[in-house]
Image (cartoon, rainbow, N blue to C red; front, side, top):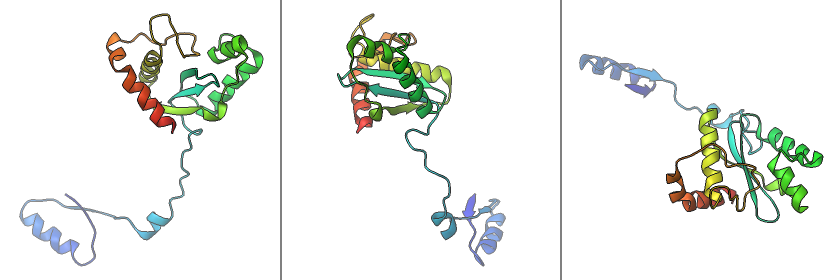
Length: 169
């Protein structure tokens, strides 16, 4: 059993519980110092790794991606691709075809997972939730539908879309 240490009480309690064959370990509780002095900086939306993200366009189309690198660095790479009009990049291809403006300030992390395969699967689930049919990208700027996923995920695509919209607020 783990209990917080209380001066004068803990040792007596430990002796009584030992008679009942209950082993007690005392751990340090929260202190005023630990409450007030949390020096660890908070992760902002930009300073995250291992994320699934979305980048919107002014026309309402969306790009979904995943990255193991820092999110802000990945967005910068997309911006560079747009400047160079690299058509291998889905966002750059969309901008070149339409002349639209991408809403970089609205780029957001929508999910996170530490393992690459799981991130790729989540990315594919989000992409397929927004793609109305096989080969039809609908409101997506992505060049492909990502990893192959079971069609059962289509049954809950509206739930996934609602979840993404709530995360954008």
